[in-house]
Length: 178
Image (tube, rainbow, N blue to C red; front, side):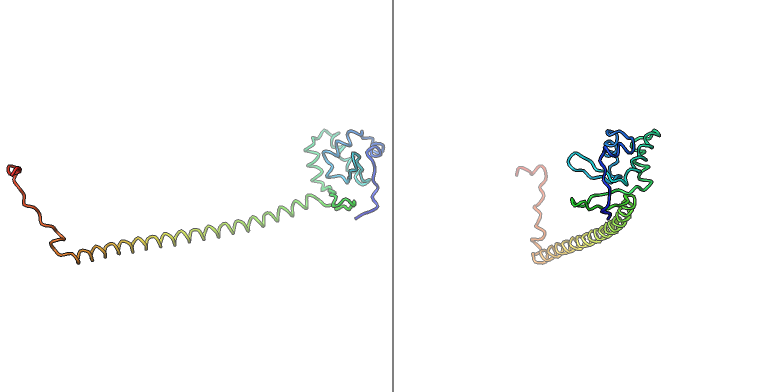
């Protein structure tokens, strides 16, 4: 951490770079994460080491590049971004490209772990479904056997006459009213 940073106002930057005040403020709004800045009230203070970045941004706009193109170029150049950690002006400079790469690799690792867990859960679900199906099949077989046994016991317990009741004698059609 460098505590000997020279902080300049927007007006001082305007005098050094010949970039208009409003343009500097626009650069801060659009590309401030590439610049070492701090804000007190409505005033911006820019570190003197951010002047070359500011001039590079100006040159790119003069070359006719759009905001997205300028941002992409700054990212490709690996312009370090400054993030204020506390209000005590302690700052940490990081290269956002490297940080994003680290985050991306960590996400890929997590995705692999998640995928393996999903596969494991699917295998467990298939196992559970198979076991439930097998249990249901055995249960239905047992119920059928039990019903069949009950029928056989009931049939054996009844006398033969009750098992098949006698049939009433058949009357001829002409004897129907008798």
